[in-house]
Image 1 (cartoon, rainbow, N blue to C red):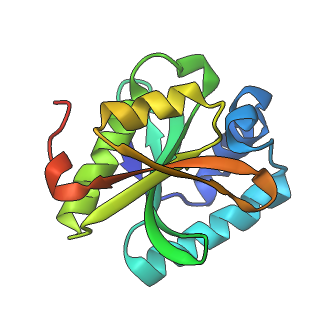
Image 2 (cartoon, rainbow, N blue to C red):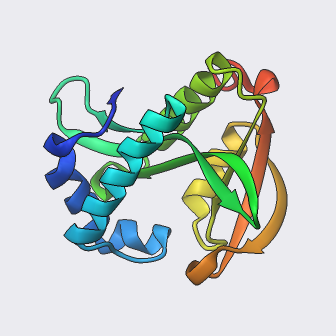
Amino acid sequence: MSGTVPDDGDLDFLVALAADPRVGATLGGVRTRGEVVQWLAEERAHWERHGFGYWVWCDRVTGEGVARGGVRIRQVEGEDVTELGWAVVAERWGQGLATELAQASVDAAARLGIPRVVAFTMPTNVGSRRVMEKLGMTYERTFVHGQWGPHILYSLEVDAARGHGR
């Protein structure tokens, strides 16, 4: 997989990803095209503000989009945190792509000098919890994530994670 900064050329892929009910079940629901357009604008603004953010990840052989994710600043209970996030097309689940993307994101955080990252998901998202644990992340707490309800939060000291799992 290789990652690129999302742009308008990725819109159809991102809309299809966000509209898939299997993916939506892991992210608190499906998103409309309009919501994805808004997210894409916000993501570009995040890149401009911070110099990093989510990427669109493509299959190295076919060039097709397979995931979106990376490192970005989020608010969790009123605190700015650096989050690792990912979403993989459902047809590619179970192939290790989320773990590969998440590890590449940890490595990017290390290169950026970010000392600590978090990841969070709904308690029912067993696949993402497994990725967090493979990275060596530690369960920290459960919190209510806005309209999406209870989420579990894991954290990782980035220096300790450099190259973990490789």
